[in-house]
Every structure is written in structure tokens, then in C-alpha cells.
Image (cartoon, rainbow, N blue to C red; front, side, top):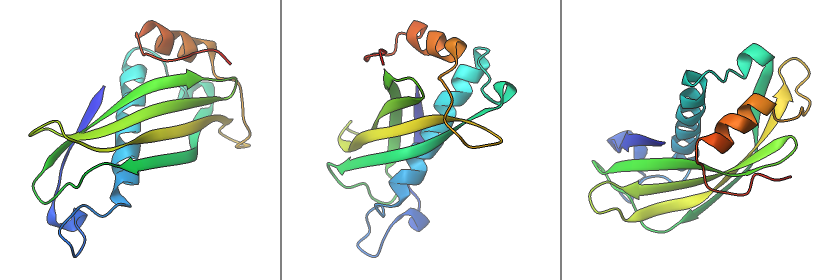
Length: 139
């Protein structure tokens, strides 16, 4: 699963490159698209009263993106724990496939009302595992 982002003037800092803080937004958008794709497959966390919150975000910058570049951000499940999941995220330019940023998002599954951790739902775990996502799906 991937999400496309066209770089606009408002994305850039005074040096003319994408401001580093924008990658958190791009990655959140890509993660939302990834969850939406799972929901299209019949997995709805909201119907179970579950939300997913970000517990950790790691970004390593590899090269610069500039005005009018088109970026593609891919999301893959790397690890499913008891109450959390680690997603591998990679952003590259579509023009030459140069990797711009790579890293991880650690998400925690929480009860929507109490915002306390809950186990990863079995249906979600099965959907991610069956989707052919690479990674280690053990505890």
C-alpha cells in the first residue's frame, strides 16, 4: 500500500526543501490510507470501539525533496505485538525512486473510551498476516 504526496510551496522551508516536520503528517496520511484499505477488506476497528494511537515515531532522512517533487510513501506491517504494532515506512521520489526518508511508527491499540491499551483484535491480526505483509508477527 502506498500514498502519493505532491510537494507544494507550503511544504517547503526557507532552504527550498520539504520541512522535516511535514514527514510526520505525510506518514500519518499514509498510515490512515493503510488502515482504510484494511477497512475496505472488512476490518473495522471503530466498530469494535478501538482506536490506534502513535506511541513512537522514528524518521531517518536520506535525501531532500523539493518543490513539485512527487513522493510515494509505503507502509508495511513489521511486527504485531500483544497491544501494539510496528509499521515500517518509506518515502521515495517517484521520479527516480530515490529514498527520501525511512523509519517506523509504533502504534498502540486502545479502548476508544478509556484510551487504555487493548489486545490487537484477532480479525485485524489475521487480515494483516493474510495480506502477505512482511515481518515478524509474533509477540
